[in-house]
Image 1 (tube, rainbow over the protein chains, first blue to last red):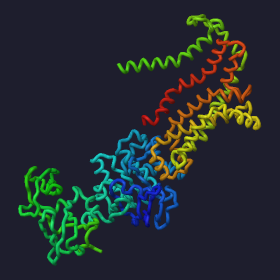
Image 2 (image 1 turned 90 degrees about the horizontal axis):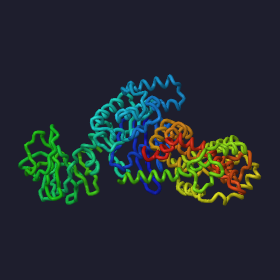
Image 3 (image 1 turned 90 degrees about the vertical axis):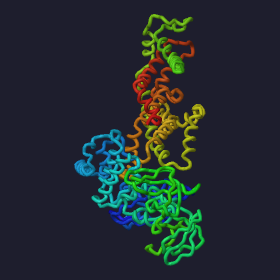
Image 4 (image 1 turned 120 degrees about the horizontal axis):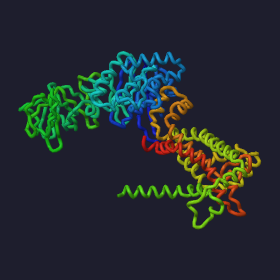
Length: 364
Length: 268
């Protein structure tokens, strides 16, 4: 149980700055996910918290105390690595008890702790095996167990599920959430997979190019993405983006001129939209309906049947495509021409710099 | 066809390399007259007289013991220095690490005779002439570059995350070296040690120049049979056979380990 706070944290490798001043406060028992594309600095940030990388600038506070100079093991944090990093020459039990051995605990005390954790993870049968005799899922469990045995103040998990197959991934996601609830410990989870972040985290930190794009609960990010980047990164299939130019707004709404010359009406309340400026209109696939009188016309180029629903991909013009969610039993075929209606209440508008326009419904 | 050719070529190379040793072994059992016969005698009545002559003239056990002590001692000393050096260079490199490695290797390009006089004078004033310690000192220095290079490349193969995991678990630097890095690079360290032992065993230059009786190794023993006033090929062969027999046996036993260690990184 620990609070972790970053203040204007920067990291340079040589002259090259990869983390550009990050401020972040993580509360006790919070499950926070750092998410972003590869190279965005999320792993580096985690390694700085762990103590495996030094901070080039800024402050790191663990439970309110400056921790930059504290060696990794003394920070009371445990880390789970992407490729598990088990000690290949030790058995599972030895892997798990290594940190306790270094602390000078007696054999009996070590065995007791290891067994308790092994029970919790359902892997008592594996204790005498060597890492090379374990499957990927089992190695993952051992890596988690090794972290848990230490009863750390916080867990740092670096893409822990990325080497597992899809079914195991889904199962481990639930298990991690359960563990978080039972251990009542702070967890920081790094992933490039927005689904993992969405399903597990209390709070998501979306990173891009060494900066924090947005911090918020999964639904906040989904419903009110602060930037074009977050809007495109969170959610699958991706949000659709169309070029649009606003006209003068009134109480009822605001006209938006699309590239094809069609004018559609956005809901009222976009405070900062300036008539005539170039905007991006974002809309999620589930907020587009099939409507013969709809404002957009397109030809279906592909269908993805998921059973419960279908994703249609339509070409509106040479360069513009649209992803649309519809019913699972749709009768639409590839090549059909189809009209679509964009639901005005679910528009997202971004200015030329990619920032979300202010809306009167936004909490400030 | 290609494989057949490679097979034949492989055998030819192996035989070419083995033949002198075989010939030396056979010559050791010939009389001095058959040893120099033309055409060379392939079939002859073997005799042990060379061996008894050689063993009578010199105390083989004494030389062999010196060889064992010097090659093991030098290897131990080289590892003791080389492991921490390679650890530092492999895991905490700085801008100069590459240069240092190259510079270390470049010392092997200097012919040993180039430093004979300074070493000789140094050893004489330090009282290290004809001592095992003196020979261990010079041998370990001369294998050190190779030991560091080999260890360096083996250490580089160890996944970084495993060492980082151990740091999170709370190892000190010494514990990291002893409990994690050394066990993980075991085959590599074994191969390095084996190679170093073999190099030290066969080292003759310093042994001939810095020792006379007490600390002389088997290479000096062999050389003492190369007589300037008449060549005794059979006796020289017998002495040589005695000198290489232990290390050949040792190499034979450990060849699997050596091959595994040398291909450590490649197979992983």
